Image (tube, rainbow, N blue to C red; front, side):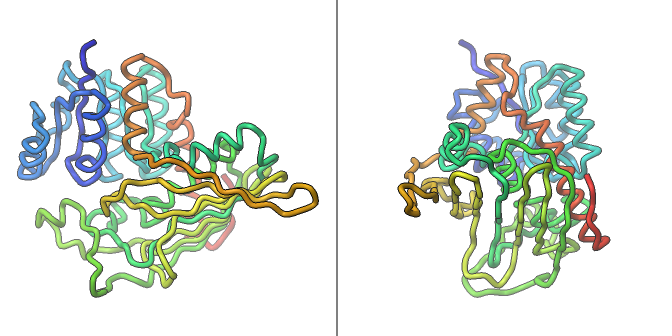
Length: 364
């Protein structure tokens, strides 16, 4: 069986630490890579022995040898590059967030549906070991009817530098960067309920800080000396109440806030049991993510009971890409419907920012 040939657009951190090595491990061939920075393009293509290197992504998607692509670029480029790749006949795995807004996300979905070419979103936390185990419990009805989740992705000091803090390129701060992960995962676990309204606030108090022993997470553009990384016009903390048709989510997300420790957590309340995922495993710190446990809370024999279910270590980005390669190889649809869900998540993100801007409840 011949290897699936893939191309990666964007040679920054996420492509080097996740997409490229995961494709290799999944048995695909990373046949091409594109990046506008020639020095970075040369370094990454040589490091991973990638045959083709392109300064223009349009040359990559025009290559008939390439069957699928990963979009690993700043957020403002996601829609344009995804649509172009789909129109060129490629299957696409697009990193989160889907786009800068719901209008762009909807256009991406429509082009995928019109062309019949696969579009999958990079919601890698669905592939975590604890997430998958909790989803099994939920699907078996162990939690009963789920009516509320309290969720967060929060850092004490972890503001990225570079395009991440430039609104015209990123679309926003931690809400669209890391909050998107926990919103998607919670909604996925809850059965993808339809969002109805959002009330939110955002705050910006930590433009710059200098903490001994903490190095800022710099984008490749900053490391390459292409920008100083000081431009910052986005929030550093946000909180929101997201209402669905029959349930709610309470969200907090931050790049910088005065908390005890960094956390990624989801507390789910069901009529039969509650459940908890609580961890922090950022890929940019080189961890092998997502070993740990799922905790369940309920009652039996007139007593309150707690359960802890141990789960194995899972490299969620790798599992995600193994799944994507299988879809491409077997010409299967994405049964997880990540692109459809991506549009709904983008609507929620848009509503968070609009509510924070106006101070009003925003209906979706």
